[in-house]
Image 1: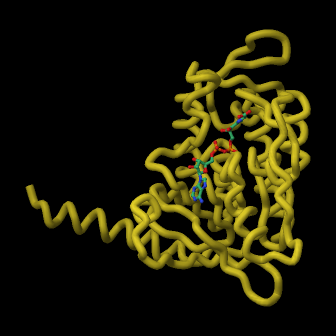
Image 2: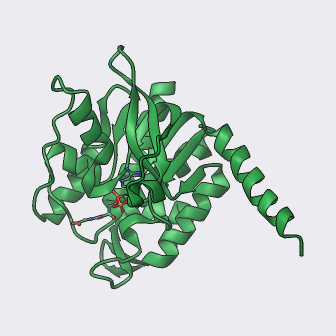
Length: 253
Ligand code: 48H
């Protein structure tokens, strides 16, 4: 067993992909359902896309289903996305479908990677790249271990034509723009209390470019635009991810 060979294989192969991902068409921040679906649809259309996820595991809040019962519920439109991704689901009652959260996360992750999306876990986006043309030009990243241990280690830059904020309830990228760009560039309204029907509809409606070069998707979209949460119904997250990809594709056309 050649330990040096193993170490070289890992570092060389990782670095090759990492260096190739320093200039992207689209950077997705957050590997929850919205980010995963966005990355899948972009990669499928030949967009050079990478997804950066703070945690060790991809999947965000989807692993735990509702209250750690690892099942997710989707309605008709969400089921179509699960079908396309080959995630099994079955009708529970008219118009409501149930899927296994573990199968959903793992299959969606696999489909995104196989479509060509690069996924980098254990990396946190801590800042944005901005120029005096009032537009986002990329993201600033660091190892999550550096963030967690509060080490004073400078980050690095990834240039991206478009950034998708899919960071969930925290809407972290939008909040960075609000805080750092100022001048009323973005006002993050904050998410409202649970109302599944309105939350589901508004998350798709709210998925849009909120600042030049920054598209907001998933729960972050409702947090930015002041709409309700929806609990463990996930169709809106999937549809939002797909819409975010469509917005990117329309900008390129
Ligand atoms: C890198 C980051 C950073 C950062 C965060 O929370 P998520 O699952 O987000 P969505 O929007 O895809 O799905 C939301 C859904 O899971 C949910 O919470 C629902 C439906 N709630 C309803 C309710 O009523 O509560 O995933 C976001 C991901 C996570 O994995 C984070 O670790 C990651 O983004 N992340 N990654 N850099 N700065 N911030």
